[in-house]
Structure formats: C-alpha cells, structure tokens
Amino acid sequence: MYWKRLTPNLQHRRRKFTSGKPSLLTMSHATDNNSKPKSMSRAKRWTAEVENLFRFQEAGYRDELEYIQVKPGASIDKWPETGFVKKLQRRDNTFYYYSKKRECQDHDVHKVKVYAH
Image 1 (cartoon, rainbow, N blue to C red):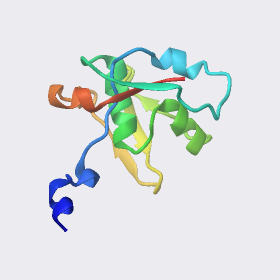
Image 2: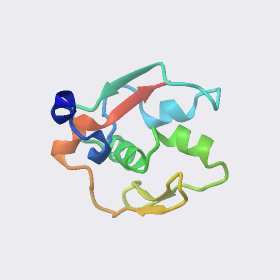
Image 3: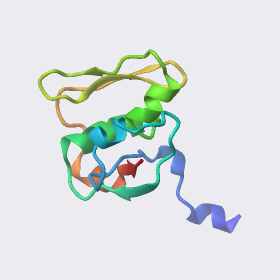
Image 4: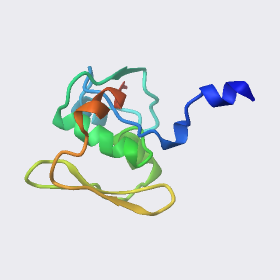
C-alpha cells in the first residue's frame, strides 16, 4: 500500500528521554509503585538524568520506576564515577551493558522522554 511506504519503520528507532521538568529524585519518591505518569516532555539538552533515561528507554523501559516494577529484586548497577547506569536487564532477560562515558549523543537528546509522576 502507498501509505506504508510513507510511514517510517518505528522498530529501528531508539527511544530516549528528555531533560525537561521532573528529575529522577522526584520520580523515585512517588508514593504509588504502580503510578502512571501524569505528563511527558522531551529533553532539550543533555544532562546526567537524560543519559540515564536514555539507557532505560533503550532497554525498553520508561524510566527507573517502571524497571523496578517489571523486575522486582533486580538491582540497578551504576558506575560509581559518573552515576550512569551500568547494566540493565531487558524484558526478554538479555542484558544491556553501558559504558562509563556518555552514550546519548546530541542528535538523540530530543528523542528522550521525561515523565512526570
């Protein structure tokens, strides 16, 4: 069909979070573990928070809260020098390993989604 050629293949896109309004500290203090996000914005510039959100979203999770809900008991390994996420387990039980260095490039920052809870 003609419309199929015009739509981009969304499966190959990387999903990322934004450096907008809420911080991970704010999100981690949500009272309800099953809380749904109230709003979403996109990152405007790179920050350490955006970097971690990028890593969670690349592994298939919305943010740290969703990772904890889906994988209860799984620890979130972080690099002590930078505080960036070191390793995440995907839903299919494979692992993503991340570098100490920045992995969210400038051209990917605007794709990162930041959720407010």
